[in-house]
Image: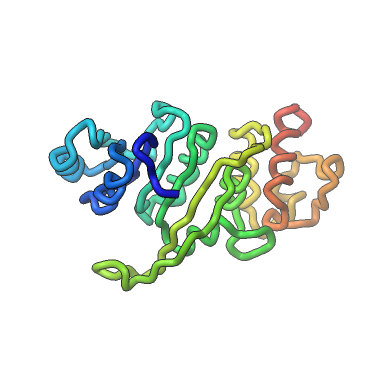
Length: 226
């Protein structure tokens, strides 16, 4: 969905402002987070407040909770930090209206992957328990100068309307341990879980469980039953 003048938009990694210029045609103003001091200074000079507020900071450590609820995040995310950045942003799912990112195609495929597929993993579950996602379109290397060696894609993330309740720290710990032992069965990867009580076959592998199953495990953990 196109931005509107009253939207609170945060652009991640604006760089030289190629996307920023197009956003300002519709949005009117935005916040930008740029780690490079020189680029941040250039952006501040070209787009002075109040049109753009530039935050020179490391986005992996940035507290998005300082922004108002209903913010819209957008950006061409740095491919080398995209996965840890997505895990970081997932913590603020309850504060965003939506997110639109361009990422390496491989990462987008992992984000939207279904259970029991090669792409399905920790990132898939961490995001699908918080967001509804859609791969919007694919972008070939020829769209860039210089051309990268990988394809890219644009993805939209919207917080789930009825998000299940779970302890986020518990879920993240369960996912980390489960998918670090991907070749093991569930009974060996998560030895403390009472799978019988959950009606889950402990002989399955971590990639065979749906996101809702991991939510149930996290909820049991919250109640102190595992």
